[in-house]
Amino acid sequence: MKKIHFLSFLLLCIASTVCGQEIFIGNAPFRTSTSLNGKWEYVLDPFRTEQMGGKSIYRNATPQNKTDRVEYSFNAAQTLWVPGSWNTQKPELTYYEGNIWYRRKFDVDKYSTDKRYFVYVGAANYIAKVSVNSESVGRHEGGFTPFCFEVTHLLQEKDNYLIIGVNAARRADNIPAEVADWFNHSGITRDVLLIETPKTFISNHFMALDKSTLGDKTRRIKGNIVLNGKKMPQNVQIQIPELKTKKQIPVASDGTAHFTLEAPKLKLWSPETPKLYRICIIAGEDSLNDEIGFRSIETRGKQILLNGKPIFLKGICLHDENPLRRDRAHSADDAALVLGWAKELGCNFLRLAHYPHQENIVRMADKEGILLWEELPLYWGIQWQNPVVLKKAKQQYSELIQRDFNRASSIIWSIANETAISPSRNAFLAELASYVRSLDNTRLISAACKKDQEADGHPDNVYTYNDPLMEHLDIISFNEYLGWYGGSPSECRNKSFKMGLEKPVIVSEFGGGAMQGMHGDSLTRWSEEFQVYLYEESLRMFDQIDGLAGMAPWILVDFMSPLRQLHGIQDGWNRKGLISEKGAKKKAFYTLKKFYENK
Ligand code: GCU
Image (tube, rainbow, N blue to C red):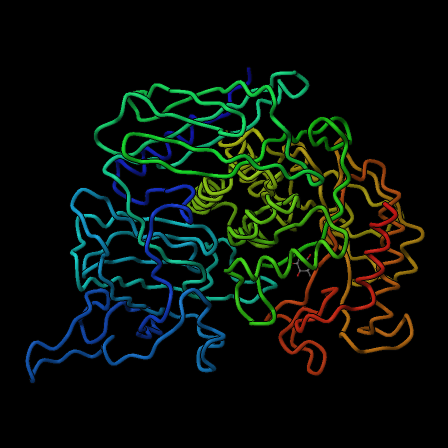
C-alpha cells in the first residue's frame, strides 16, 4: 500500500512546535475561536522604520506624563477594515506599499489558564510581524497562505492588544518578485481569529482514498492525525458516522496517529456527485469535525483520470478578487459570486491564478463539484539562484498543502507560470516539484511551460514544447496568446502543437481583451466582436491538440492591474475577462459556454 507521504509533514509540524515559531492549525475556520475581524486602528510607516521617534511601533507606546515625547498613537488613529486590502479603502493608500501597523484591542471571553490561545491570520500581504501586549510573537512571509502564532503566555482576560505590522513592498527576492500583472492588494486581506484549544489539541489531519483500492468492493482511507501538546492521549478516535465507521488509533511518541480505515460503502467524490462525509476526530479533550470527499486523480498516457475514468477539464482562470468591491476576495459570498459565474459558463474546473486563493472558494468547490488548480506565484522573474527564495517557496507550499490537503476539489499543484528556461530555474523547480510530491503524492503537478519558439523566436507553424521542466510534471501546461500578443486570429488556422513528452496537456491560458459594451467588426481591437473571433479561432486550434485534457482561458472576469493603463479602455484593469468588473457578460462568454456544451 503506497503510503501517503506524511513524514515530511510530520517533521514540519513538529519543527514548528519545537522552535516555538509558526504552528499550523488545520481546519482553522471550524475551530473554537473569536473573530477579530472589524475596524482596526492603524499607523503608517512609509519608510518601514518600524519605529517613530525612537520608539518601536509594536510596543504601543503612550506618553507616561505630560512632557513625554511619543510620535505615534493608535488611540487617536484612523481605522481600516480587516479583512480587506488597504489600497481600496482610502484614496491616499491606493498605491501605498510601505508598512502599516494595525492594532486590535480585545478581551478574552471565558478566559482560562487551562486553554491555549493562537492568533490565526488567513493571509497578510506580504510580510507580517505579529505582537501581543507589546511582545513580538512571530514573523510570516508570503501574501496568500495562513499562519498562526501561540499567544497563551502573553494573554490576560481583559485589555489585550494585537499589533500586526504588514510590509507590502515588492522585492526581487519575494514570491512573486517585483513585477506581476495583478494589483498588489496590501494588508491583512483575510480573516483574523483568536483560536482556543485544550492543552493538547489536534494540530492537523490528513486523509485520502488509498487509490490502490479504487476498484475494490471495500475501499480504504488512509491518513494521519498530528497532535500538539506536552501530554499525549494514548489513542485518538476517528469516526465517519454515515459509514458507521469508528476506530481507535494509537498515538505514537511524536504525537502522530497514522491509520487506515476500511470503507466498504464509500461513495466517491466527483463533479457530478460531490459527495462529502462528516469526519469526527476525538483526541483527549479536543475534538473536531470536517467534511471530506474521497476521490483519486492520476494520469495514464495522455489522459487525466478522475476515479479511474478519463475527464476533460472545462476550465477558466480566475484571480482572487471581487471586482465589484475592488478588493481581494475573502468571504463565502465572494466565492459564491465567481463560482456561480463559472458554473453558468459550464465549467467543471477553475485555475486559481496565480497564488493561493481564499479558503472559502476551495471548500465551496468541494461542495459544488468544481475541480481546482492551485499555485504559488512563482511567476515570471524569480530569483532562481537564491537558496533563500527556494526556502520561501517550500515554506509557502507547505502552508498551502497543510491548508488544502483534505479538499477533494483541489487536484493540481502548479509550481510555475511563464518562467524563462535557465539552469537555475530548472534546478529550482525540479527540487520544488519533488518537495511538493514529498508532502502530497495524492495530487498531480503541473506548470505553464514555454514553447521552444519563445527561446529561439523563429516563426513556425508547429509549436514544439521541450521545456526541461516537463519531465518533472504529471501534466504539461502552457499559455498561448496567438492572435492577441502577435499574429492575428486567422493565423490560428495553420498552427499545430507537438509536445516533447507523452503526458496530458492543459492549455492554461489563452484569450484577449475586450471593453464590455464596445462594438465593432471582428478586427477592431478591444471590441467584443474581436474577442469572440479570437475565441472561435483559438478554441478550434487548441481542440486539435493530441492529448488535450483540459483548458483554462484567461480569464473569467476583468481584474485590477497597474500594468494596464490604456486610458478609456483599461484604466488599471486587465480587460481579458469574459465578464466586466461590473458583472456584465461579454459576447465571448457565450462563445466559450457553447464550446463547453458541445465538448
Ligand atoms: C500572462 C500571465 C497573466 C497575464 C496574462 C495577460 O500569460 O500569465 O498573469 O495577466 O498573460 O497578459 O493578460
